Image (cartoon, rainbow, N blue to C red):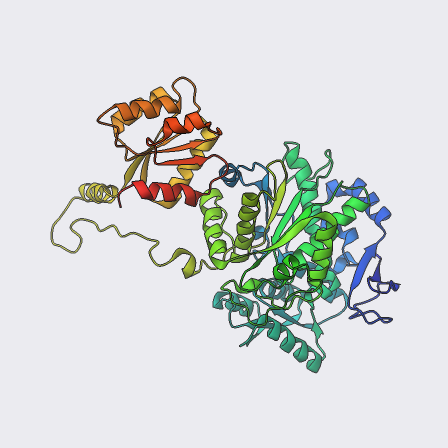
Length: 561
């Protein structure tokens, strides 16, 4: 049996856990924490962890479930941790890692919360429960409650996508749609639970929910230890020290995720299992940023937002309560920030993550990517620091305002709708030739294969470009003369004939001098070098410090429509 205590964070009252408590019996505070026999827990980890299944329950000694027979599980946890290679190249930061929570049973990090919270309900003999949600909690709890045989009432706002409500209903949950804000939905859910004497899951004030998020920290530290040692991060770490990143990044609504994650890192650090603590960066949407506003005005309590104005419904918590103070304390102790980004920045970042590294995420995760881009631009995060970003969930569905209506192109087969009997092979070739007429030709001259791959990927994701590549200046000049591209993207520092010489050669040739050139270089140019290029190129971008939008902006200025 796994015994643990409850401790009131306000008055210090302590008791051995024997069942759910709403608040402290002495001071009535709801700030109760679970604490464990850490010596015994880490002792068992040392001898048993490498043999355990790769789920959150490998860390069961530090989770608030007393009997393993009460565990309700779909095999959640142990989600991948990997490097964002193309984003790292584009941003000049090689140490960006993604904790891919999209791989959970219902597609979000809330699967961890549902697994532990529903297991705690089962252990307490609860047969019926109420939860308020902006989407992901509703889906995760519905799946786990179905597995546990617990009836679930879900209160959601009308801004939650219909597809998510439909999935919640599919699991057999009762869905109550509230025509109001999320905070109003929470209040109505609480009143309903009280009137029916049904258990109410209070999110951050529910011990099991908060404790579940510690497993994100445990997995990151264990997997990062393997990854930084050059080994498989998905294998149990049996040889290498667990590693803590310099930064942990996540978008926040109620704040449960990073609060639980930081508690997990604290437990590892305080008991010598992993050294150090990460700085914490949390992000909100500008149209509902009670924590970010308060943080930047150094306020002790959140600047509540009564009427959220955002299309990202999962982050529309205007009254975060005690969560802000907890996050603020973590940041003041360990470093970090709480920032806000606009919806437009988030949707732009969503496309960048998908197009650069193949990561399709929910808008809430896109807020985290947008916040990361801003911190890197500001120099808040330095190139040597290791970043782990919580990719909290998958996009579901791809909203119209992200891709618009024109995301397909029509290709009509010749002879279609006529009596002509055109051979299929000829018709297909003709159609492909017509399609290719819109393709514009670009030559990339770059000796670094990673940089060339990044530029190629940006171009591929943005339009119909026929791309030729060369790896040195001599080969590049030959390629340009043979293909006559509409644009040259050129590196300056190459073996043999460098980029400066290529520019001079093109401008000296009457047949090539009008081809526009965009230079992308890692070199910090001297005044003399800048004068040498002056008037000869259309754009100059610094490697590792430009976004794809910067490159495409320069390209759109010089290419014909």
